[in-house]
Image (tube, rainbow, N blue to C red; front, side, top):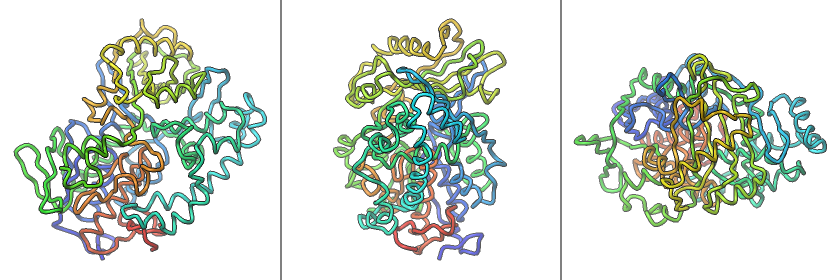
Length: 526
């Protein structure tokens, strides 16, 4: 058995290299360091966090680059606890109420809140009959999450894992033949109400009309466990993880790119970074899967994911981003998170899926200063605007389109009462799909990684154990995208890696899982 501070034998002398200091890479580094391994993390950027970072801009503005809120902090809290620390001693998380403000261009609005009486009243304002089914929706999804959580905690690197006890127990509750919208029709007749509990599929870059019905648990998680703002931005979480990792002896090397993974026979045995060849007992890759795996690993060492298969993989949508530093404050009506949902949302989603640039897009606005005064100087506002758009496979000429689409988005923001933005802009940065590809190494600019359809999930997604001595972590591997899911993936990856090096099963506590976790990382009954 592997042992560490809790009475288990350490793996002292073993070395692991992690490529990428995103949330998955940092969480894996914490768990491996906790088990006694020597861990070195490389990242080409000068700042940890990958896309989960907060950047300072001229004029004193601060912006989250990617994720702007925090869900289900319990998984990360468990990881910190396994390292002898409390998450709340490192990061201040403010629970938001309302969680966000939904504005329907078709008419009506909902201020989403976890207070069930208030939420029912909000729904009743636009669909009185649907309000009666709100609690039933939550009760059913509480059961669905209970049965699916063990599936999320197991690895799927063997085909027989698809028939694990947890999977067989969960199947009757998952209804794989239904879409999210189709499942919601059992509760809500009004399309706007269904959309209020379905737009979260955009976190996966998916359409609620195609996304498997399992993912109704996304909106349930928000209401059951809260939507949080990390004070200082989501990058504060990444910085806290990196700070703890360094105190635990992890060597984090920023501004250093890895050129390739090296192999001895079939086994990964290190990396080449510039003129340096570093040897390791295992290598973990944390990055956009479809891009980084092609750059770092030759096809001979990825027979199930050769270039031709990656080229045919279904990808998520991309996003058109605007980071605006504005003089003056926002109207009181604009809360921390606001989502404008297009009048014809189904057409909007269909256009994105079909590679057509929407001319009446939905959009999301974060006004972090509503909660956190440190995101902009006094009397100013840092505004984050996200518009889902097709990825680069659509062939859109963003050099030609960029200025026009910027003007269109500013015009759409007027529907939220933001009428005079242009004259107030003191800082502006735009990131379109080409910049997601070129500046952030995102394959085809697909911001949310591989699509989460049924044939790209579980066993059919790139495996956490990618090959002998080679592991993956991040949104492109199992369980998928989204911060809490990526942290869960880090626990799976770390557990598989430790088991390989130790040659024995590893207790759940070694990777911050409750001892009651029903499955080992191998997908077998405990």
